[in-house]
Image (tube, rainbow, N blue to C red; front, side, top):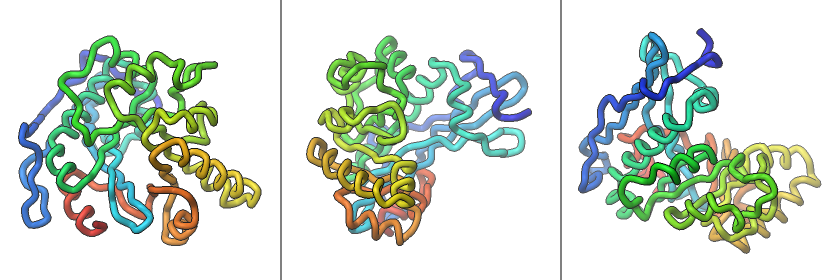
Length: 277
């Protein structure tokens, strides 16, 4: 069947295999040793889906990687067919999304010592519906200092400023927050200027629209300048090639993300970090 028709029952989610090192991951000869294994199996009727973590690099103006966004590679267990993540998560109920988030946080904890050694941050996405579930059911353990929560562009509640949103305040008391996809969703300008976020990611859509419209490029520069004044840094999404990286270097942004640096699996983190270190 088509992935759009995916239905998931909460009782059908199980963690098939987990190996979490309390001591974190170790580095040996530039290669990640040991196991970082957090594969989730999700069954829908007779169909089984497998989720595994992948990591998208975020790099600075010199090209050095300083963070990774943790995402999910979702495939059919039967034939390995890739499933659209946005379709999958739109279909998944909150309790399953919550369990996936907890699994991601546990995976991030296995990399704690390595991240501290390499001065790397790991970001994990959270939607409003998952944040509500998190507030109700809690967070197992204390998140490591290397972990960042990315608040999605559809997180803002109607007519609420960031400081007036009790759910956002709940998250900010427990995690360092990033704002994702700024300029393409429901987050108004005041969210970018609120100072509640360590980093603000300017969306791929906003950046590429500005590339095609000279007036919009002036606006993009102004937004980046303004947001940078109220937060520790701006990350520009949609940096897909060297030409766009050169444009980014002329802007007031402290980080870039996009296809210029490929996504990697956990066992490739050391190699790509050394390559762009």
